[in-house]
View: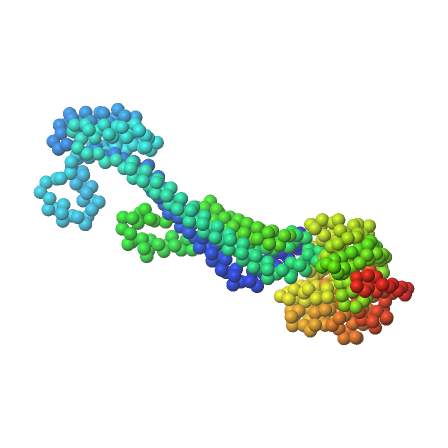
Length: 298
Length: 222
């Protein structure tokens, strides 16, 4: 058994080397296909993670009318605290808001210094329970508060969470679609490369049959060849993906400004890396197996 | 024992490559099949190792009807035979050693044993010094000897050789047939297709004469 395995591996190695030009071509195609899948997978990872971060930091801000009495402010706080989904409530005074602005935008210090008064209103900041983020109860509460006297404006980032989740799904779908087409392309390319290899070794296959080689004995080196091409292609795509992820923020990321956060790539996790590698192996195997079976009739 | 019953083979109408060939070859026999070009020598050998199927008739080898063996199991028949093809059928991108080793590799013989047996066989055909060369770098006669070494390396029960000395000088042809004779003495049945009268006269224990696909004569010189 071990002897046969050694034999198959040596035949596979010889064949890969013998037809190296066309094998390099198919490895390149597989690599590009899986790189595309990987890039979209990584983009989708980032969008999903951003949506998750936004959900866990879900907050609502109610901006209050200027000059509202302490009683009226307490009344609003009381109404807020009666809801079940609010984890905590904080009153942000105009001076605290100004301080925050100064800290967040130091480059605008000149403009702040030139202000005659404090333009920031008082506000209530609410941290919402992550499970209730998208609930109709929260949305209804926010809508009610918008119309309440004493509240001038409401800031609620639920829209962003939904948009992030939508983008993540879209990126995943584009990745699956483009990747699917490209993987199908690699499948046909492997299949044709193996067909060419079968053609080139027709004489050898005939000899193996005539000296008593079983169908399996003839097929296995071709299968191993397809699997090796697939694994090499996907391994290379994984390596390139890591390079792209490392290089992207350095060379292109800075030019994207605010979009950088959204278009940032995240390294694939172990499951995704295994998925890419096994996908490559499966593509190679199916490509060669169908080609050998149909073409050789062995 | 090889038994052929009323074998007919037609490649193209209206010509018959084999016409009603009935023949019995006992274990350990040494046979020459001879006749002019196109007489059916190669076709007869090819039907015995089932490279081609006869149009009609039955072939039994050790009592087994080889025409009934499923394609997936045909290797069981071929492993009992060593075949020398008229056109050699060598793998030109593999070394002499690897060409000769193939019948042993398909049955899973260990590497050391393969090395030992291939070397010993190549010594017999006087090619051991060219073991690592590619067949393309060898002469026609040397390529033929590689094909012979491949046929005998796994000590088969039956050896079929189609014009195995066609491209060899008389001296080497003599040596090669002597080699087949030695293998025959060890118990293998040997059937050689040839029209080399000198060799047939010298070595022919049993001679089968074919003409236009028909057996037209038999001679036995025990």
